[in-house]
Length: 267
Ligand code: ADP
Ligand code: MG
Image 1 (cartoon, rainbow, N blue to C red):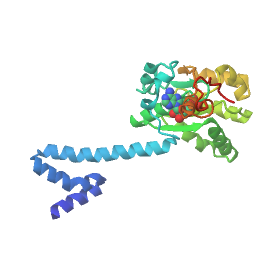
Image 2 (tube, rainbow, N blue to C red; image 1 turned 45 degrees about the horizontal axis):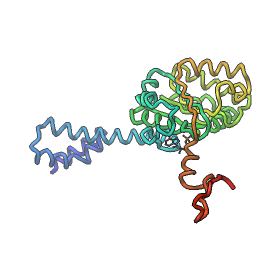
Image 3 (cartoon, protein in one colour; image 1 turned 120 degrees about the horizontal axis):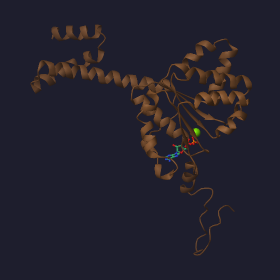
Image 4 (cartoon, rainbow, N blue to C red; image 1 turned 60 degrees about the vertical axis):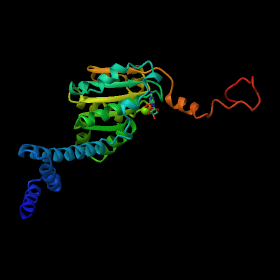
């Protein structure tokens, strides 16, 4: 007993707290199953490793600031035939990220751009990578504030460090000139350093207007598109589908008894 307590103390001192907790049950299992010394040691270390991996996953998930935990497996590819499922499955292997390539999802609202981007980020986190998610509005507000307060150098680290930086919703608001310049600096910083996943409801032809400067937009796109996969989604909004299914807005039920009534949509 004293010996067990001493071993538990040593495990704690050596920074193996999970092994300290599970030592006694592992010892019991080992004697019940007549395990070898090596079998016992392996099962003790495996339990330590499992707890560490789970904790690391939870930490990276929290630090990623992902707004939802959408998964690729929850995406209905049949609903959006303009998307090549095989290509998305290939992105889920994260080979693009290890090559430092960018992904850009373009398309109208509700077609699944954010869902796919977040789903790929979730795969990355489960593979042990680090991710940081932001929206264009939040990014710009954050960088502009840091710039005004003279904290920009320190703030860049947040966007430089992660293996994948996702910037969602590019194009909903036009950037002021200083903001356009900060975005350019960010793209330069990530260029050939780490992957970005971007989503936008605007085609590249509109980015000049969006960044408030055509020359700046050209320079931004030149870097972004050098190593890139662009997924152009054309199709219906999934939100509309869900609304229709819920029997709302556009499909009022015909009055009772009107056997041959024609549905006309909105009244
Ligand atoms: P976007 O970013 O293109 O505006 P989102 O990815 O936010 O669209 O999708 C809107 C909502 O619809 C989200 O809740 C998303 O999970 C869901 N969604 C979109 N497309 C699909 C799909 N093909 N299968 C399952 N859910 C979808
Ligand atoms: Mg979106």
